[in-house]
Image: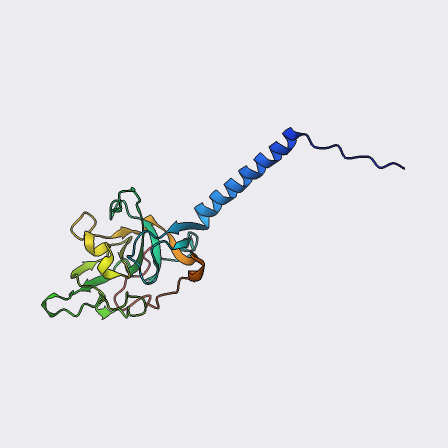
Length: 217
C-alpha cells in the first residue's frame, strides 16, 4: 500500500510559525525580567571590590515578595526620588548599593575628623564590615547621624571613598533615604565576565541588632 505523502508547508505557514515563536520568546523574556530575574550592568566603581565596573549581574526580583529586605543585601533600586540621575549624562536612574540601615534603625558614624574612628554604627553597635569594604578604606570618613523612617532604607557602596550614596544626600528632601518600594531586587549573580562568574556572597551582617524595628514592610 502506498504511503500518503505529507503536504509541504507553505512559505506563509512557516513564516507564521516563526513569528509566533518570536512572540512567545519575547513575552517569556519580558515575564522573566518583570517577575523573576533581570540583567544589569555595573557602571561605576562604587561597589568595588564586590562588584567591578562592567560586571553583568542578575537581580532576583522575586524573593522580596516573600521576605523583607535584609541588612547587608546588595540591591538594585530606582534612585530617581532619593538620588536623582547618575552623573554620567546618560539619564540612568538605577543604582546598586548595600543595605546598611533598615526602617527604625539609628545609623551613624563619627567620620574621621575630630578623632572619629570612621566606623559605622547601627543602633549603637559597630558593624563588622571588613569582609566587603574596599581594601584600605574605613567605613566612613563622612559623619552622619540618622534614624531611618518607616518604609525606607539607608544604603551605602562598598567603595566608600568612591560612592555617592545615602551619605551624599542627607541635606536633600528625604535625607538620603531610599523608599523600599523603589527596590527592584537583590543582586544574586555575576554572569560576566566569565572569570568572575558566580554568586554574590552574603555580607554576614546581623539581621537585627538591639533596637532595630521589626515588621518594616
